Image 1: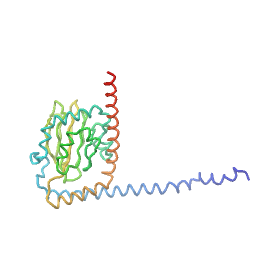
Image 2 (image 1 turned 90 degrees about the vertical axis):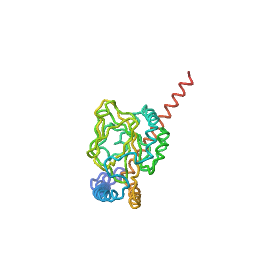
Image 3 (image 1 turned 120 degrees about the vertical axis):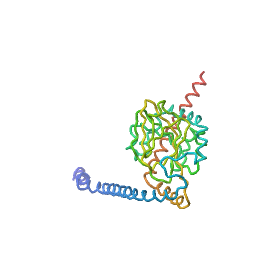
Image 4 (image 1 turned 180 degrees about the vertical axis):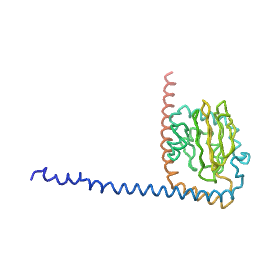
Length: 290
């Protein structure tokens, strides 16, 4: 028997459609189970979040209104005092604007509200985790953020001209969100945030605080870019509210809602740090030639 004849049955087995289907089927079944689990978690997670929202509201030590008087939070005062230094830091970052990822690049869950890099995010903190390399790009901002009790997330939020962020809600009432105006269009009234029925307009150097579990949306109806510092911190609550929030945040870190953005944040952080280091080296080389 020739060598070809001896190997013919083996070739037939490898090309056999039944064999190929049996190899693909487990992978397909695994993917279906994975998608089913994800849908179940998402559906039941929303129910749980609604119940938690009511309980956490009852535990709050500050107003449950959509927009909250920022003077209730003394740790926020230094941001207005040092806003120009913060603005100067973000201006340096914006020199490498194209390396700042779109929100949808960091968190694929945000593709409904963030598209085509019209909403870029330079992340400093994510769920309490400090992004060391990014923070090194903004030392003054970082020092101020370190003084905020129970800081969760922080990033420079960069919105393109003529962009609209569709109405959406935050995940948990246990967290409050602060905005500090840095680079605001001249026609400030045409660049605004709606929280429930209240309209907020950014002003350079001013801070406002809101509860992002209320429906909110953003319009930049100007021809200028809008840049703010956005950061989240724990809502002041009674003991059981704080305990429940700690458990909720810890559990959230085991989900794809946290894990995927965390991995993406690290990748973009490395890319930005490498690019700025290269730019600095080029500037040094040019200055030495002179």
